[in-house]
Length: 450
Image (tube, rainbow, N blue to C red; front, side, top):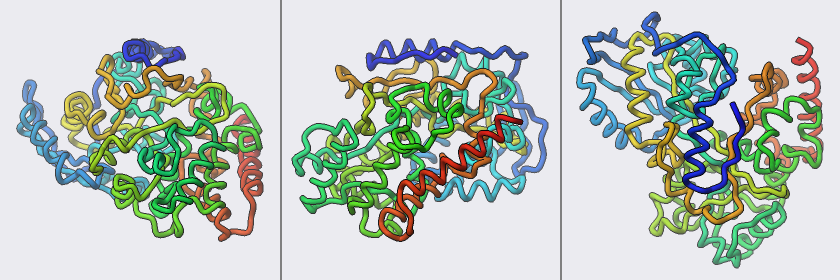
């Protein structure tokens, strides 16, 4: 796949994404839809008659807030095309934690979000291939994160951009009228919000854990390079060294916590409540993907108060990385794979979820851009896809990370940083970074020698 720079021209972005979707360096045998050869599901066997499907599928989701409302409407619309397919939903409040436990058995639904904790190489053990990457990429973008041996195992529910969700009125009331550009400017803005005394400057959502993983998504912005994550990172021994992107990224988290610019007691945070609190001006900022914009705006009396900014960076270019939200796949143990695949394609192409609920762009090639991207027209902000890993290094970052037990996309070391900053752990930020870097170096040497 080629790397293309995407300036925030709507037409240019559509064209680039279309080109990206059609480019591939992989040459594979022809593939197709998910097969029916599996066992171990509690659902009834799907029967196919002509173009109609019948059966029952269970769809797992992390959207506890809309599972009983919006998702029920989706099922009703889906049934207009597939009247004989019954769709059940199960929402998991701690999706990553709960789904990992469920996947120890064969019963983890028919359609589900691929958990980030599953190593790329292990994906085929749990999920059904959705088709050949070279063919499916003509239809969808963002498939690369879950491609094994030329087969795609997940389709993004949306293509998001990453940065900081903030309440513009809270910032303006504190005297901050323009979005901070650098880490120093951002910390200074948080100080002004604290001095004003009406809102929590930066909300970490520590207690729910998973929101802390959203910080990792802005690594490209801090680096100022789309090459860093997949090309430079796996080939460096200085991943958590001062001056490097990871060090600079999490120093913002540490400094904010150290100065009391976060919640008074991080252990008592609440994700659902935080959305309403931001909408009502009780929170200044949260590091979240673009998927959260619509959720918070929907709770605000004045939706225009809820805005989005790039993560602060000292880099010469401001890049807001385009990346997958969760990818949607089919359990290897589902007996209703054709019905499950019909749901996936309908959900992504026709439900409106990617833009209306996920707050990102549709992964469908040629789909129109969401309104949230248009706010950056005429600015120096660039939207770019990360450069894919070099040939032969696919999944290398994931392998090093898992072997080192660092958890780049897990909350543990982020919690450790916060705990150290607020005085609950007797270690400095540099102590933590050295520990992480030592683990990275040892693991990288081991993985590279295999």
